[in-house]
Image 1 (tube, one colour):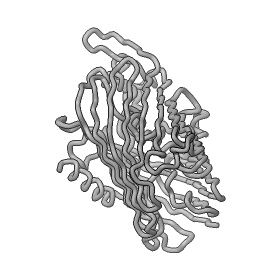
Image 2 (spheres, rainbow, N blue to C red):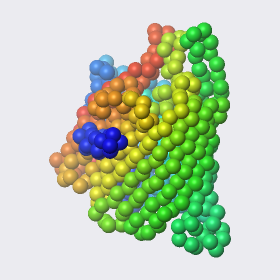
Image 3 (cartoon, one colour):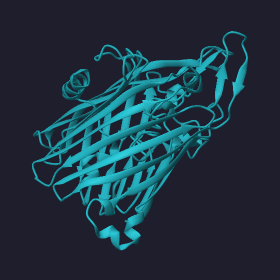
Image 4 (cartoon, rainbow, N blue to C red):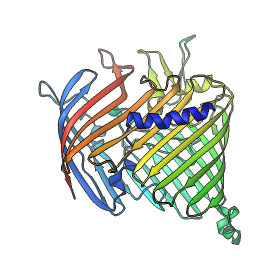
Length: 439
């Protein structure tokens, strides 16, 4: 019942917060030949500081090719370009929001740019990982998937400008190589092997507060295998039973058994749901690479002390848990996603994920957004454990958009000498008026 209450609250909250879906699922990306070039003028308010804004964000799609840019020029009240926006090579790369070919799930899919919700397999090792959870620390990465029906590969890399997170999952449907592969259900049996690692130099660092020593396990690596058996494979109804097992190098391991269900093909309504039961051992965290990972990897407290996700592994104890997800799509335009995972019997340890997109169903209104929160206690709370992107806009005429973007994210906190001494929450409010040239 508790899980059901959280899932229901998740759907309600996603409607109320009006959060932003990732660019991967944006409506412009779904059109075969379309494009728009919004040129916006407005202001950005960042933790009380005011900047004048010029924004150019073209998004075009030609067949399977899609391109999205995001060029922001923010000037202080004294006329200076905002410090930190364009100082390094990575800052200029961030102007490319994405370049993609096809969509995830197609036989060949590639995406360069921001990774909004990267996923490997069933998500037991990597689930909704974001390389852009901090606006000021956005990275440029890549997703590449190939599916040859009998076997395939999912892959991602988070940061071309530095050491980042690398994820690979190879899978095979072994019975497809035999005549048994034509038999319903058993013929679709799939097995996969996953390897994910963080090559960042801080990934394996740990601080001992008792004696003040620092240890380093090096690159953090997670290995796993999975098995999936399709119970139903119809045009309108699909369901898969699956099992995952994963091991974090030098730490613990865990397993999950789950089932998913997809009901579609009705034109009006598509519903997808998933539920899994988790069996977690000591020193293991499921979905290790998640939406908050880039913040949790390494958090300086001062010039010496820090906390890290590797330290959280040391403290993790064996527990059972669950994960549930529900997607509702109306007319393939209004999309609502709610996901929740938590260990059993451990208070304030849940992880919530929400997405909402209304497309062009509501006349002249644009609404969308996303919300991620860890260590769930109060559901409607924004703090250091939260990320929120919410946008609402009004189009009085087709070529004019009046909108407001709200972002609750995080940024580095530096001392007087410029050393990073931690992270702080960052609130952005961005009202603007955009001229939209569509074709």
